Length: 372
Image 1 (cartoon, one colour):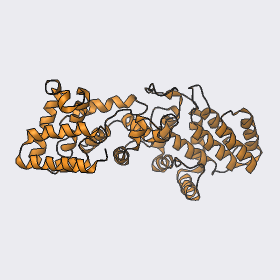
Image 2: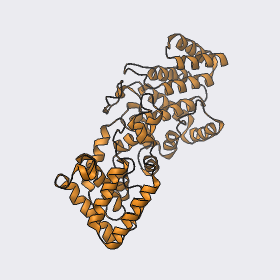
Image 3: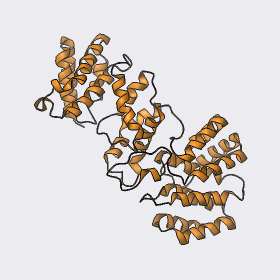
Image 4: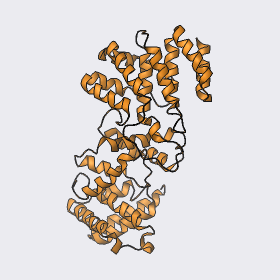
C-alpha cells in the first residue's frame, strides 16, 4: 500500500487512543487498519514504530489482547467489520502481536509462530500472501534461530525474482519485499542450503576445513554476472591460496560429481510450476556452484578438470524435470572451459555444440568456440 496520508492518519488515531488509555478500542482499530491496508502492509512501518514506542506495560497489554483474540477469533469476528476472512484476521493478529512485543516478550505466541514457520521448511519457495518473515524476525529477536530449512525457503524465495516461471508470481513479490531481504542479512545459518547431495557433502567437508573453506563457498558468483570480474578473480585467488589449491581442486571435483543427483530432502512444488523442483538445483546454491566452476578455471591445469566441468554442464542441462536443472550453472561451466582453453576443452565444447538444443546455451558455446 502506498497511501502514506492514510497510514499517517491511522498512526495519529493509534496515538490518540493510546494517550486516552483505551487499549481495547486501539486493538480493534489497529486490526481493522491492518486488514484494510493489505497483507504486504498490515499496520505499516510507521504504525508499528508508534506501537513499539508505547510504554512496556501498554505493549504487553495490547499484545495480550491480540493473543487471546487469536485463540478465540471465531467468537469475535464479522466480515462487515474486518472485510476479511477468519484466516486473514488470524494472520494479522499473530504478526502484529509478535511485532509489538518484539525485544520485550519473546515467549508470547512463540509456539504459534514456530508452527507457522515450520510449515515453510518443506516449501520450494514461499507463496504466503502475508509477511511471514516478520515471524522469523520475532524469533531471532527472542534469541531463537529457526532451523536451516526455514532459512533455505526464505533464500530461495529471494532468488525467485530472477527464476523463469516465477518472476510475476506471489513468490517473486515476496522475494522483492525489503523486509524479507533485510531479514536475510541477519539470519545466521549454513553457507549453503542443505538438501542437495553435493551441497551436503560440501558443507560437511567445509566444516572440517574450517574458515578458509567456508569463505570459499561464500564467494558465490554474482547472480547477474555472465563471467567473473577482475575484482571477483582476485578475491577467488586469495581464497584458493588460503584453502590450498590442490585440496580445493579435489574437493570441488568430488562435489561436481554429485551435482547431477536429485535432492535428498524433497520439497513441495506448487500448481503454478510446471516442472519438478526436486530435479532442479536449489536457486540459492546455484550461484555457489557457478563460483566454484569459475574458481576451478583459476587453478593450475589438471587432466581431471575438463571432464569434471563437462559433467557439471551435462548435469545442469538435464531436463527430466520438464525444465533444465540450471541453465546458469551450465553457462558457468562453459565459461570455465573457455577460460581453461586447450585442445581438450575445445573438443568438449565442440561435442556440446552438436548436442545442446537450448538456444541460449548453444549461443554461449558458439561464442566460446569463436573466442578460442
